[in-house]
Length: 412
Image (cartoon, rainbow, N blue to C red; front, top):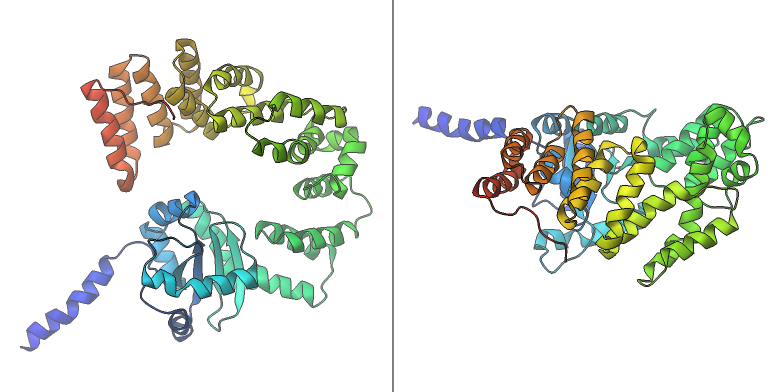
């Protein structure tokens, strides 16, 4: 009898040891979760997510389930996920957290997802992270929550108490921006700049560049009036690139909400207002995005080929893959598909054939060009690299290739 009882007691312990990934508390109220963190003397990690947020889903499905991520978070934190939108499919547990989400949103002004809030065991807010990430980097970022010298709200408290040393102000402004606390970011960055006698150092110009968010900002006016001095420090064309981003944001983006807006006319007006700033490169990219958004593939196809001919050397692997996949799904011209294949190959080479999504794009383009055997071989390599949760999708593509069925479709 005693032996049987001992074995029964071992079962939950064994099961617990086999759990992998981050353990999020479910079935517990907000008060119970806080009490558990206090009792176990652990920080409370709060994942603020929405059902429509792509990066939130990536973190939930790909990052948090990883064993090394779970080992880290389960050691240092009590974790809970809180949904910040409302849907008809919400469970009673999700609904019970509606008031908590509203309270957190009111207190901490959450405007981007995912946002992660970290509370000390005592219940006091200490840190805030915004945006998803890959596992190792996310763990490194979260490590800042465990140390007072890097905790965002702990540092903000020092600022409120009167610390105005230049180095602290600089670090605090960057931390506020990283936390999407724009009000404090703007205020503290201005306080830092007021301590500087020379704004044309590399450090200060790079700092200014991070806080150019409108044509009224100090950095915008400085770079507009003396771009040569800025480029002499940061590199040729850097001032123009930073200015162009703001110009497009103010003079073009707001009008694109109208489906019939003429993109070329908007750029002509913007360029006329700022004749000394070359907005061509950013404008060419924005046009591609507009054509893609409108599903205007007749305009997208020549535009993306022209963009790559002019700016291809500066395009990163992720963008190469995005362009190539869009062509694969929506363009039929053989020359355009061949060009996309070259872009896709470049993205694979840049990542040493280790990124399964890039390999999948390359395989699909090969297949669409009729190079079936090569396509199948590449898709098998992608399948071997992909995470367990995505294997079915890749296997379906591989099966279609082996059966000779189409793997592409026209966007509606």
